[in-house]
Image (cartoon, rainbow over all chains, first blue to last red; front, side):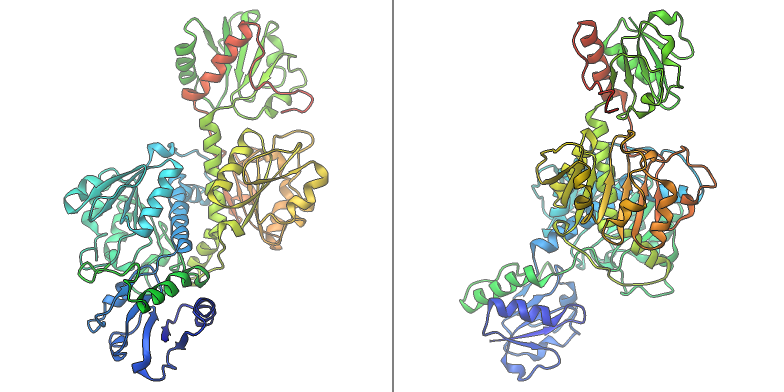
Length: 308
Length: 308
């Protein structure tokens, strides 16, 4: 059987080695060396161009090289086959680690101490116990749920917002649009780990910021499309938001002239919150190939109607 | 019975309220309103001047307002009565939180991403799993032990160095001067939480830095006296050390002209790693007063020979 690999980010040689360990007879092809298009059974891809996948007419499934599938649903000609997210313990742990790092950075007010250092100022800033600090996580799926659980384990007051109610130890669940304002009203630190869909595109905007407590901090590790980019700097400059740690952007790499680069209250990381590691991620891809070959349903196939 | 409170840092009114809740008949006196010096039974102090305590000739014990007692042993006329450290769950948790925050900051290379942001650079930096990262904790007492355990719980590779061997889950114990070089040889992030004694004064120096892996990062949350201040910047400038997060200094507040303020690889926090909160700390002080009054030994009395 043949699998087509296409990504300008992930390393084909690593994926080839890891998948061949698990499925020795796999015909692993790397785009653009596709060969006979009709022979391609599976596509393992990151951000294919719209129309790319439609040409493989015998495709049985598409596997995303990341946790998100928005890069696939952006294509109106996406084949009507199972579309599978990547779910992997290392990817999930990496995201929880990114979130805890940035929550602790805001919780302990390191940006404030950095500003004081530049001004030669020696002054203790207000501090709270973690249980006195409310952190809100938008999106309680694989990644958001793990991040929320990690924050709760550490002792933070954690609440989560998702489409449907979720049960996670130590995390207060808010579900649906009607609960959004109540959720936001206490979030001193807001973490976005939503899937990017038509319903969540641009959700981080001035109206939402206005519902947060004053000087709340924003951590976006989901997709650049969640944030209405032009609304962020005004919210920071008025003090409605106290700071932002952004890992994702509408256009990546973030263009050189973008005002985020030089804003004193924005910390930029270059989409590194959590990265796919084929040493562990290849397990799920190999497992899904075996399942589909055996006529079983693949794991972590997304619902095209919801888009995640 | 009478207790004398003296500190230019801690709030007398908070301590008075919390201690009177526990010992309603306590005669709580705030320096300089001492009254009859011979009537003072207990001293609850932070950084008294040398000679200060010698005048209270009926003193039964001295209670430090912090975890360290080096500020007391600096006084050659310190009365020969029990000298007690402050041990308190909130103080211990606060220190573990400070250490985890700064370890994660170095582990995820936030200083590197901040440098890249200033240069408009979009590039992922090498990342490791926490279990691939070795963090060393010097000092495994109340605070160091808790910090090491917190790091181990998160999954870091943790080793600790102390005078005598310690058993902490997930922490590799190195004990005594003979084991120091072996301990240091793998520490990518080094945390100092030693007590300050004649044996540990100036222990963070060029010789020690040279034994760490190249580009190791230093977190000092113990005392400024542990660091030979003039050795730090050369080690950072040659790249032997990759960064330093300092909460304590020889002279505090750190003097305006000190070169640490402006060094790009030093993050300064103004001795805020963990602060005493009388709401919880008053328990131990009240308990120790009751114990001494009942003829029992107080808790957390230090060994004057060791100095901690």
